Image (cartoon, rainbow, N blue to C red; front, side, top):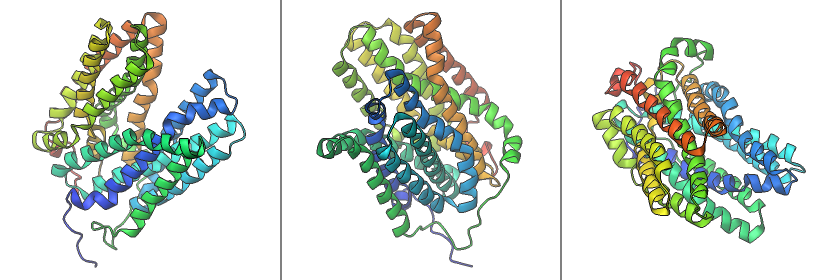
Amino acid sequence: MSDAPAPPTLRSLVASVYLPTVLFAIGQGAVIPVIAITATDLGASVALAGVIVAVRGIGTMVFDVPAGALVGRLGERRAMVVGTAILAAALLGCIASPNPFVFAAFLFVLGGGWALFLLARLSYVTDVMPPDMRGRALSTLGGVQRIGNFIGPFVGAAAIWAIGLDGAYLTHVALAIASCVVLIAVPDPHTTTTTQHDHAPVASVLRDNRHAFTTIGAGAAILGVLRVCRQALVPLWGLQIGLDAAQISLLFGISSAIDMLFFYPVGMASDRFGRRAVALPCLALLSIGFLAMPLTSSFAGLALVGALMGVGNGLGSGIVMTLGADLAPLEGRAAFLGAWRLVSDAGQAGGPLIAAAATAVATLGVASASIGLLGFVGVATFAVFLPSRPEAMTASSP
């Protein structure tokens, strides 16, 4: 038997989780803004470019469950290395794509690489951190992801200025490889040589945990809807009330800055007072923001709504990951987390469709109010089904 692993702390996750994650997230942030531009440069129409942008998210969804199975077989660190290799190959394929259809195919694979990397780190943190520290560990994980995505567009812009549009993709390749090097080079203080990986069948995991997916999972999916609709409806409403692109960008910058301030205090509150203490106000404030948005008619009014939404989203830093970690059974943990990510990703994928349908049959204001009301359905779902303490959610904590 090997020596017991060191007791987990947030500091012990810096090299194995947080540093690789922020490097990875900066690369994501560099690439996401240029996907549509690349598609149009390759000859895609505006409509086709919009579809191509969605392909990356579809790829992530399709690979969520297989990624969980693969993490169970390989282990978390090896799976992150494999995910990085897939991602790097897909990014180089994006650069070499001769037309928008080949580009879309590589984006689909890119989504799979993202799914594997992100699922592996979630499974790792779930495995090593006890329930009374998961809130802080996973809210910090969500926080560094936000920070990386915030920095990424600026790094990507510098690379594009230096070498052209391919610079954004090469930035992601370089930073993904750098995160992989960190994973390989730095010893993991929480892994023993006797670690056994989980091969539980996905179907049985889904069957045994269907109540969690259909109750708390539904609330997590609704939160995903609100988060993605915030990104879509706020700029559209800004345009409708006469704001220009610079003002709308400033709104998002303010909201994002507020969002990033909350991740560590939220994690502490989650661990001390329970998951409901952060999940309910997160959904409630986002929902109030959507209900209030149609009442605004100026930059100042929409800025206040954006700030409120930033607070709400910040209160939910890492909450979906934390809930998944709390609910995940010891046997079949990686498979469960893959399915859990599929639930939350489905909410984010379905959000724009819900907003578009509401706008098509009514107005943008009605769409915003509809999303807000849906958010309160999520509040009610969490209030009914989410226990106040994480220990009550599962008996499988490590």
